[in-house]
Length: 192
Image 1: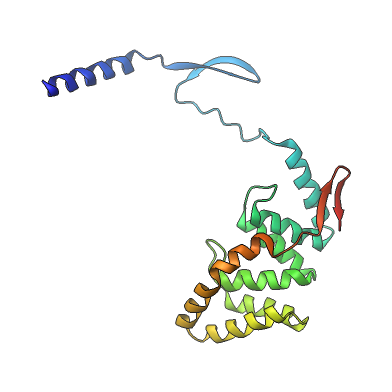
Image 2 (image 1 turned 135 degrees about the horizontal axis):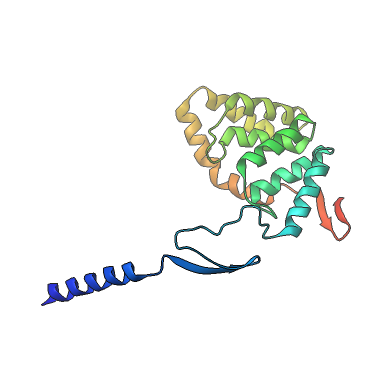
């Protein structure tokens, strides 16, 4: 009896699926139309937040001229603050800031290369380069990280243990340990 009931339900489901209309009525900004059921309605050109896009474009324009803004833009991409989180863009803008002489970017880049970032593994040579620049400017934390990186470079097991010890505090630090220099106001981006 149970099998017969299940069979009848399956047959009824197949019959109703075959009788379903091959199209569906979709209404959007351009009006209403009948479209195939399997069509997509995603519009990649549609901007869900034009104000956010305008602000991001303005900061990117400033960042191309001022390395401190490149540093800020990197933090925003890393945190997902006002933009979609994007580790690739975060690293690109942070490198831009570091290569153009922003001291805070030296330590940030040293950490990124030492710990790795999402899909990117650690690069001890790059970490050493950036941490050395930060330590040369008197950054005590950079000097400590640099010593740890040099020691860990010698042994993968030491590096694994060292990274595990710092991993939790490292993520929290990115969220609040680095301050922005540029802030949005009604008149546009302002440096503080």
